[in-house]
Image (cartoon, rainbow, N blue to C red):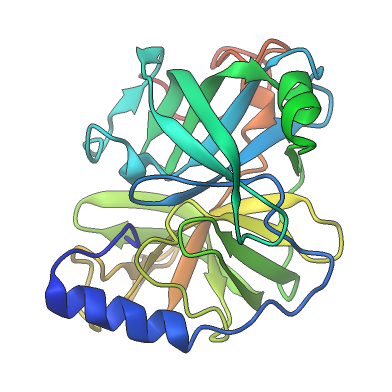
Length: 271
């Protein structure tokens, strides 16, 4: 998982990776709507039909929670949180303001790797105060070869590549993620990019969330996920980067941005 690396040697490695990271390739992709967490990246997201008067949501990874990694099979809902997020300017060079969470409406590392924070501000209030609109969550499955930008608020870097394909199951140290997104090699994401929105370059909409990479070529261990196909065959792809799809999230949200796991069409794991 690619949350912030710790320790002198690891920090140096991260700094080197940062220097060599690819530049943003698309003028249409900016940092508008993205946030920086204390250890990860994230974004202000909104389903297309959600009213602007609803409390805004920040999306990051489940493994970026301030309380630590959820266990395999664990689903968190309705947990109080006062976490803060730095809202970035469109060029990523400054912080427009600080957003604050009211609660974690949903978080898990089972089937996917996501956390959804409900804020104390509405989308309309954020727009009025900072001139920032949320990133829209798509409701359709992404397709292979789509050009994408992984927008890291933590590092203030945009990594550009394409979707190489999809992984039936991605296994990492006991966690299992389904139908994961595999990137082409150009997206050299590093520690701290966890939770970055995966933006479809052509539309500017969110199709996924960045979450892990195989760092050392190991098999199914922490920070070294392995791919498992429909027949149970295991393969290891060293230095390969991955994300998780988010198209199923809107079906699990009410118009007031509360989690609604019993809603028709919702397929997110339940507690």
